[in-house]
Image (cartoon, rainbow, N blue to C red):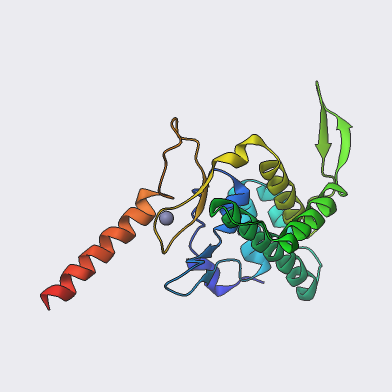
Length: 209
Ligand SMILES: [Zn+2]
């Protein structure tokens, strides 16, 4: 059923350079202020995120949208993705702050990674063996499995050493610092740069009042 609010839904700001980190950033202002803002409110939001991130195709998204799964089943998947996301956030921010990684978050990640891995099949590709995810267009859990797999791929790779967070205290979005000297400080100038500018402007305005 078409949702009226879809007409003016904002696209996701995918600035992280990796879908697993973009997923963590679907909570805006995680550490506030202002109050944290949830961007994955419905299963449809999850589909939009998965499609925009390129982990499912337009065709798969259309089929999943038309799936006969109940609202309750869709919400279960949405909750799984949020659970994955929060464990990812806990692990990533603990690492960034040199804190001990919470054992419960590690266990949660392990559980998600195992569930995703159990859904794929090894098949012969053109030259190499590839993991195949059959039935992605029919399984409403597909975005969850793909996100779990992507998170596992990142956290178990050398790339994980380059996970950083935005220097803006009220943003702290995660990103993969692929800059040449690994000196990237901001999620995006367009986002945080403008926020900073707006804040300075308002501060000046109130000083003048
Ligand atoms: Zn930022």
